[in-house]
Length: 123
Image (cartoon, rainbow, N blue to C red; front, side):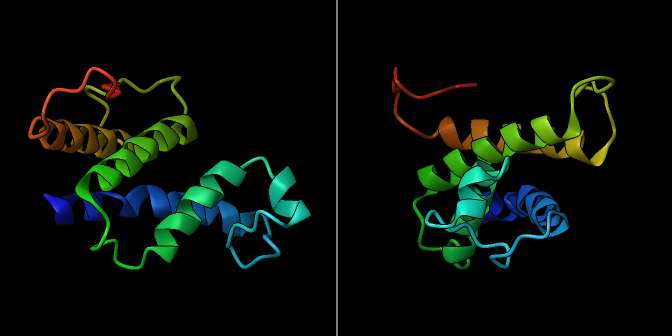
């Protein structure tokens, strides 16, 4: 399960890195909270998330619940980046929608192994 969560994070990480690269980031695609450019960048949250993933190496030492939460954030990002207009995630065959379906099933499968928690976000 852990490895599947890690592998699923590749798609949103690549999308965000492509966007960061196209913006001409002066920090070499590394979020820096002290940098004026980063603080004012419209994608600083996404960049911070990708920097955390990059700094975590292969992610193998991260708890599975942290990986699942990161994947949930990745799903949110992919939805935002792909836009909602003509996409019906249930039937759309585009790469983003297919990845969202796969990732949501993976998150649900992982979370089904956890004890009940009324504070856990389920959407």
